[in-house]
Image 1 (tube, helix red, strand yellow):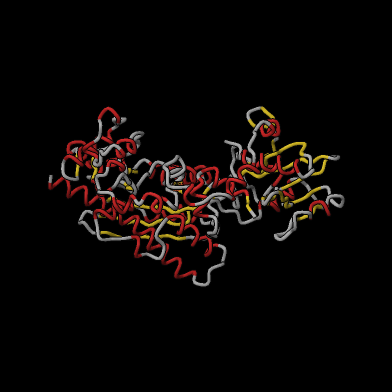
Image 2 (image 1 turned 30 degrees about the horizontal axis):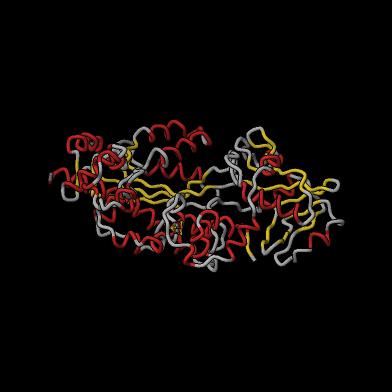
Length: 482
Ligand code: SF4
């Protein structure tokens, strides 16, 4: 039996479908929702009496129950080895309206494949679809003492001023044909072939298996060239290194220039004057090196929060003083710890001197702006902190420096790896999403070893903050030795 996710994978890349078809990996939600979205939408739609689809429902269950109910929640429908669930189905006369859930505050795109398959399958088995609706989150709604589901959701049957059901009617996706192809697929039919999904939303989990690149490639491989449309084409033609690049086939931005120069110079490129000028912003002491962690909520749980807003639950801070000594501070909160986070931050961070973070504008600075608008009492102090931030990513993303060992990877973790013996691999929590999942367990009281997890969270966030100091020190050493 196939599921809609199998069809989606097959349409993206038949090899992806083939490799993952017997793999059951644990699904972890990026956006936090402590309350069941289905239960909230039941309240929003004011449904009292409904048939609730069960995990093992046979394909004919809907037909057995269809005269007993007006509303169906997650009913199962089956045709031709394909099993689908529709979130909500409403009987309107002899026909049915379908309701799908879109976990965002803006209807940016239609999940056309899901809607088309549902529309075609239901009509084929005699469930005539009248209308298609999408329920998504209202980005303007702010939590105020209690959740107001009437204001939390928006329901529409239109996308770009056209009725969704009419858009879907004109989509001629033939699921029966796709299932025939899926069933007759063999490994010979799906040899690795680079496509837009190999690196969309992060690298495909089978990338190494398909292309074996990271193991075989040299540091200055042309494939590490960033923002390059033609790097694969050049690589296939035998242009292996960054220094071999065809200058007529690069976009010519500063970052690419730094990469190519590093390859020509034996591995490192430094625009010494520009880097010296940039680093002069860090001449004053103390210097604060700081990293925040936060969780993002689909449904706001606390006052003044909107859908998709975040709760900052942790920071780690290293302070470098006049004498070259480092002081270390951390904070981890649980529950609605937003105000405590602000207080701890203001109390612990020095009242002057630069504050260094990585990708600061899109992360720490943005978080402080959000906190200012929710807690205006602290707005002036948070604004003053914001003005002191220096983004350590700038010299790298603006091409002032490039080390070929970066392999086109501009993350803080990669830089820490290059410039020190410290490694995230030795930590129990080793990346940002793992930190979030672990914190959620502690926050919900679902962890039996909360103290140990808090300790692990501090170690992870502290290595990010200490990593900023290590990279800063490395830049100074490079300037001195060049
Ligand atoms: S890496 Fe590319 S070719 Fe390989 S399975 Fe993933 S999407 Fe398909």
